[in-house]
Image (cartoon, rainbow over all chains, first blue to last red; front, side, top):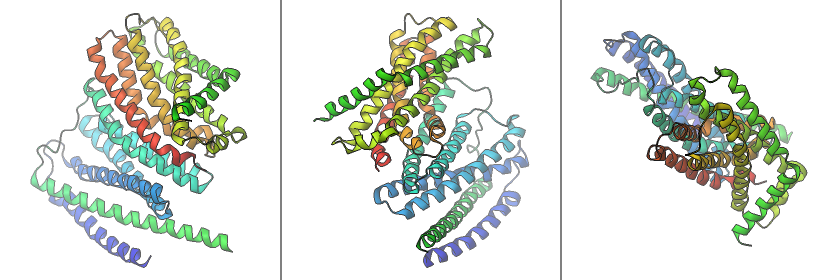
Length: 226
Length: 225
């Protein structure tokens, strides 16, 4: 527990510095995009949040497998924490996306493969949290959640591919955003640093959430004792 | 007893039970017909949109009806602790899972076999030339749905709100199956040739295999007491 506390403090400090620098890079260092203007700056947060959410869901997947194999409760707590943080980041993706899409594409939403997959992903992990909290027997709930967490993660690329094939064979009327191809070096630096800052934020929040759930569990155990 | 026999025995029990009571089959059938009727209000009668939307409507009806049947099929096992009894039997968990999937596919497919002609009648579709690949599509789509559903119905039956959880888990996860099934159905009904439909059918088969393997492996963690 002590070592987690130290790691957490280090991560908080690192994240604080990284986020400040990311803000500087995003708003001052990165050049303004020629066609889209300042609104394009949302891209750095949008992509980074998407990356952080995938990373979080990958943690859910790994922790779920580890939990089913070992039966150790701390894996379950890690999976649950990662799912919560993952939903937070995917929600940021779903909120920043339309803000960027409206001025650029002219619509808040289009049923493109990436957008639809993000939404399905959000639904899957909300269901994941519901499975856990709706199961009356906590131990079984943990197992159900682990099973669902594994299927959900394997499902993500399949969902993406299926929608992609569906749409490419049946083209959508609106443009698919094709950035990344000609990214200016300053933009690339900013993006890469934002990816780092968001990952570090993810780890910090994950440790925080994990520590809280560990404390909750100890309180529960103490209640049962008295 | 070898596993084929075990699967057959469990399947026989489920089929016999359903044939005696007929409650799941009747409910699913009436429900899927109701969905078809409700959807008719969305379109102008006889319009071209009606024919292009028919595959989507068909699969929405099947998906909703399957959901209903799947949640009932496991809930029945919980009454009088049937599931415990089944687990105590010297039978492999994988045999239980396989038998349950086959049973669910069988019931859902039966409902589809009745709904499809009604749909053909109501929406003026022509399936004369493609009935065989169409049935294959129905079967494959149903298999994907029933596989995931069989696993999830155990989970949802153990939650506080029971039936409510099943669609919330089932629909987002089975998006690929639904897409591939709708696409194959649409192209078959539109009279495209089989060479064009085949990639979608192949995809459907790939999804079925993937879901079956994953659910098969995870089933034992879900049913153990």
